[in-house]
Image (cartoon, rainbow, N blue to C red; front, side, top):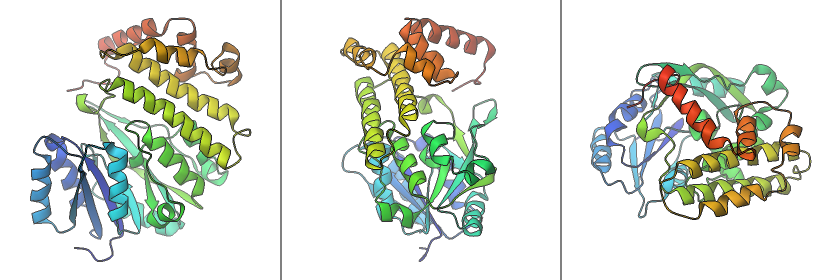
Length: 337
């Protein structure tokens, strides 16, 4: 066991035995040895726990936390944060992996820049291709302190694994993931960015995000997922009002809300579960912000805006099927297992 780890790596685990070895090996094999790996088993029903115990026997840097009830990735990460002893905390999903020098480079960047947060550049790994994430911060963004705005506009990766965070920052401001299964990462991310005194970016692509069938957005538990999107909107509105930023960032809040509405509509169109879908569609349609005038006033032209117009004109389902048709033909996103 490392007495004073430089980095605590937190990994929520749920039925991931197929990918665990690759992921854990990439962490324990880091060039920086002063790390600890905290694996939070979220009541897995496969052999994930058995695999974790095998690693724990071989390497004392591995810690296992067992949830009593299936709680989702956010609550699992919170338990990991409470057990962490590292100077910095980073998150790795159980089917992803790090480059061998990831922790060393991130730590050196954090110390050199005296940063509270270091952004990590991810690669999206498909079965037949690798795509580099282009939603990146520039030095100008850091200098002009635009990171918070770019985060809430989703112009940079906002997932927990997209950044390494100083543990003292999390503890000081009591930044934890909300008790929701979906979209919990945004609440954590914008709070971390808001409170950080200094932010840095590691220039090398260090995180491998593996896109396979199990990692794609699931439409099971669809109603819970939709309610989580709505809860995410409420949490963001509450935060902006607490910090007296709501009026100043009202358009950004509306865009954030529209993004969640688009995700909601996608779930509604794909969900096979039986529940009152009309009720949720009506909630979106009745929102006084969700008007053609407000959509145009955002002065953006991207997938979110196009999707909102498609919803307004009843073309969303057709657009979704058309997009999937061309993806199938041209293989834009590569083959998935």
